[in-house]
Image 1 (cartoon, rainbow, N blue to C red):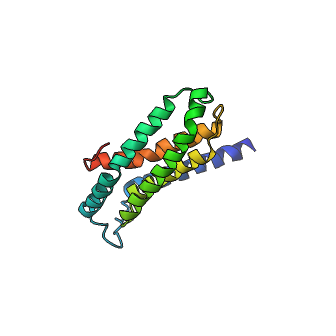
Image 2 (cartoon, one colour; image 1 turned 180 degrees about the vertical axis):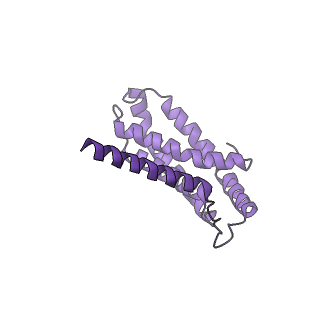
Image 3 (cartoon, rainbow, N blue to C red; image 1 turned 120 degrees about the vertical axis):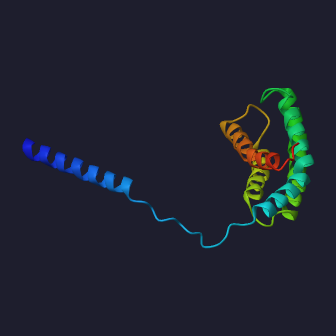
Amino acid sequence: MVAIGLVLTFLLAVAALVIAIMALTTQPTPVTPSSAPPNPPALAADDKALCQAIAPLMKENDDRSNAFLGTGAPGSPERDAALPKFVSDTQDWARRTQQALDTHANPPRFITRALQRYIDDMQLFVASVRPGPGTQYDEEAWTDSIEAYGGPLATCQAVGVGW
């Protein structure tokens, strides 16, 4: 029984070695795209136009968010008092930023998807945040919005627009 097991193990090892050698010596056939990719300079121009439209809005949102975070720890009387204005100002920002995005959404591309996600994340965050100690959901929603923020930030920096 042990001898049969050893023979099977040896045969499997030899088969794996043969397959690995064949994979190293054969060249994959190049993939030819079915259609040409979109014109990168045109997309860069579209990205730049969107970035220029949202830069003041993104700066406004950064300033408002930083001021809110600076009011104190979650659940502190100062932060609880600042929460209603933060929520209403963020909802107003989301409406105006959505309008800017809608104006520059064609063609659909990475920045439009990432910015849409960020707008949505901010709206979801302010829809659920409540006075009192923060919840794990609040922290995760905030962190998720920061991830989405990276898309527009990186794209806009790449085309020379910052905030």
